[in-house]
Length: 305
Image (cartoon, rainbow, N blue to C red; front, side, top):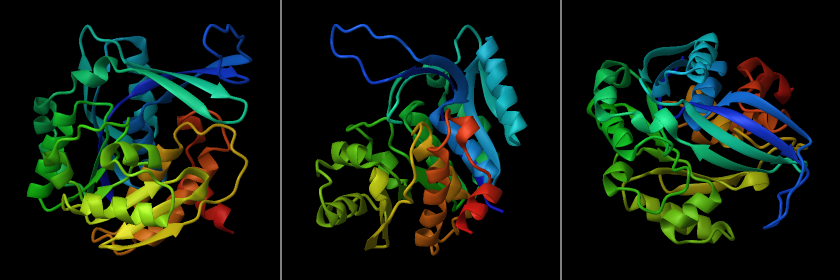
């Protein structure tokens, strides 16, 4: 069983179900409205836990009802919440999701307490981080906290996974040099590298870019086409599973959490782990919401049959 620590965001998702995005100046009605637990970090942690990883979380919530709700949701999913701090006077993070009938979504995030996470919080969780097999971070919390977490992980000889989302073209080289596996989607990768993903050659060129920073393992997710996976300079496309998408919320987060739960510490089974993670993601997009849609290991294995 892998031990996975996620340094990341915790949000409550407000989901606006609409036919399609409004045009500038246009007013439209909602088909319905719903709320669900979410946040990139929280989604990744739930995915890892439901796929069997012993999962720990480092983050912040506000001292509000949403914070209480999210702590219970994480605890109910068997995620260790000892290193989640309640930030007094802050609101828990929120995401407003415009979910179209096509299954595509557009997301507006209010960081709230997520940006109250400090390097002191990371240091407080240092023993947990150093005892992990994999440490995951993304960009819905301050980047300096990710750097500190990855430094602690590397000091203990443990592996790091960076999900560079939301997209950012000003990633400190310190963070990239501490990353063992980077998992951007094609849009995020283009913003980081300046290389537009159009074919396998552009994917290979992108992998070479990351390798210049010492990142030997790269996964570029390319939506319904699957993922480009590069392991120590050897790359290939792993196709996606064809399904009817209802809601793509948390698909990428499910992928990363599921991947970390089954990945060998030396990355030797990276290609096989991507197949497992892709199947998990394909199940997520067939249901509504973030937490409610993330599958268990049993569901993923059953889908293989």
